[in-house]
Amino acid sequence: MKIFRTPSLLLLTALVIVVGSCYSFTGASLPAGIKSIAIPLAADNSNFAQADVRQQLTDQLVQKFTRDGSLSVRDRSVADALLDVTITGISDQPIGVRTGEELTNKRVTITVDASYRDQKKQKTFWEKSFQQTADYPISQGLEGLNAALKNAEDKLSNDLLLGVLSNW
Image (cartoon, rainbow, N blue to C red; front, side, top):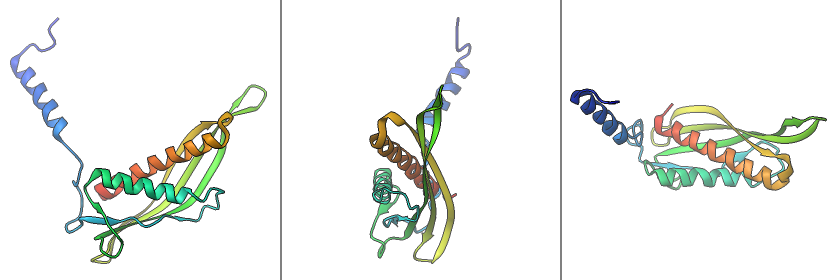
C-alpha cells in the first residue's frame, strides 16, 4: 500500500512538517519595549498551613521565565514589566473513595490572582485568576501533599508564562 500517491502530496506533507516544526511562540506577542520582567515573591492570602508554597511558586516562575529566555528576569527597580502573583486559595480535598467509604486520593487546588503590568508606561496588560490541581494518594501523606503542591505550582507557572508571552 502506498501512503503518498503523488510527488506533490509528498512535497506538501514535507513542507507542512518542516514549517510546523520551526514555528515557536517565543516572544510572539510581547508588547513593544518589554524586554525584562520582575517577579517578586508571591503573596499568600490562602491561610494554608504550608508557608513555603509562595516561595516555591515564585522559584518555579523565575526558573520558567529564565529557561524560556523571551524576557530577562530582573529586579523590580529596573524591569520593564512586573508579574505580581497572590495566592488566594489552597485546598486539599478528598476525591477518591473505596468501597466501605475509605478515602484513597486527595486533590490539591491552588488559586492565584495575577497581574501583568508595563512599569514604564504604568499600564496594566491583564489581571486574571488562574487555578491548577494535582492529585495524590492519601497513603503518601505529607510527602504526597508536597509533591502534589509542586505539581500544581509547576502547572500554574506554565499558565502564567504562557499568559505573559501570549499577552492574553
